[in-house]
Image (cartoon, rainbow, N blue to C red):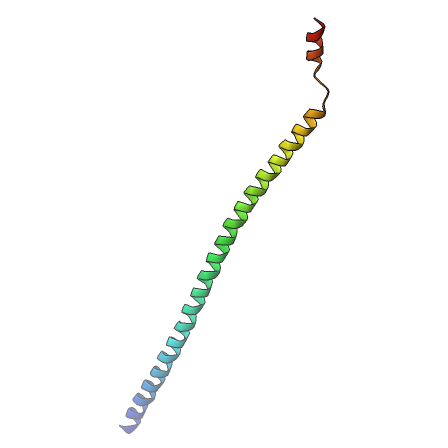
Length: 88
């Protein structure tokens, strides 16, 4: 009978110890999930910012190309049609 009582006490002690370890592990896991959530939030923000930056860079490049084309067009000699109309 004492042996059975000892086994029950031993089992309760081990069960208590396991429950405590599970609480510690759960706390650790919750902390890791919070960190992962913050990391994902930061990455999402960075991706949005990169997308906005890329859009602005493309717009800037298009404006630079348009500007260069307009400068190039100003340097071209007048079209032949204008000379033909002046001759008539």
